[in-house]
Length: 479
Image 1 (cartoon, rainbow, N blue to C red):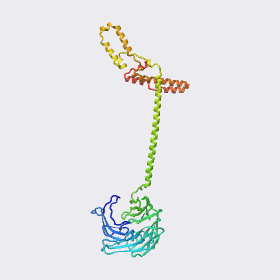
Image 2 (image 1 turned 90 degrees about the horizontal axis):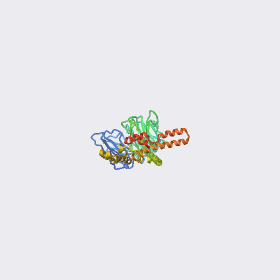
Image 3 (image 1 turned 180 degrees about the horizontal axis):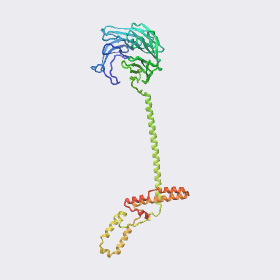
Image 4 (image 1 turned 30 degrees about the vertical axis):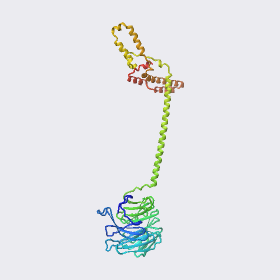
């Protein structure tokens, strides 16, 4: 016994043969262990299992093989007899198998010297399911692809025969009333038979094919469950002949349906063998379950997301390129306009001949050079006597100093940019007014005159800026 985590299984048992079917004993065998039987190509193995959930002293699970029965042919189905007892003296093991040769085999053993089997011959096609009578275990019912349900005694004699309208897939005995039998057909019909009158007394319809498996709930005999196609279906036979609940469960197809032996709301389903999505699922009717999104739909959603994301990125990059191109064009237009405006300002005559006088008090702030300060210091250093004797020479020197410190406003780098601002405002207003006069429209003149007031930088703002930088704004009026 070992644990295997590669496929999320709890425990595994090493087998010497391929396993086609596994069946736990649903009846009380008089022992704390659970009886299990599995069948392969040539053998049927009977063993006992004891789980940690049942006995705290057990670590994981304890498995013990009781006996291996030679079968000689592939096993397709197994049914346990309620007569199986491990607490009897001697112990008795009894079970029945359905084989690929279309025959039933009844095995009886005391796990010592007594090992015998009987063959039941009667079906003409593959046998899909079989079950023992739950009370005494003296009868066996089986269904086959030959469209029949047959009831046998333990000697192999046929006691009842029901003709079906399609292959029989499942057969169940009523857990309390031994004369009621349920048969599920592949065409989606579930019928209940009275073994005394050998007549059908009730039928259920699932309206879906193929119906692969059905089971009778032992805790609530009014509930019937089945799987058809990829869905599971639940009936309440007191309400309607149509399913009370129905939901998709397996992607490819569902294969088996089994109720819990202890809870009427628990059941399990399995996928179809051989499929990549085959799995065992446990369901609870008391808890709503959201069906899993199918793999094809998931791939479709993913592809749609990728396509939409790529389209969004393409549109985003295109819009960005268009906006950058428009911005680049606007920048080129602004540069062209600035070049034209610069050329117009350069063509205005008279700016280079504008001059102004600077007094000795603010000589430093105008010239921003050491020449004026040096001249003043030299004049201060002259003695009073030499000043009285050379009054004429001092006047000449002052005239020369003033002449040397005269500089045009247009050539001064600090005043030139403010002068350009003023000239731009003036010429822009003049051009707009001239254009309006040429149009000879009063409304246009008013609008253009208003527009001219908004052109450029206001004169008051220019003056305030000059004052903050320590310059004389009155020099703009001289020009």
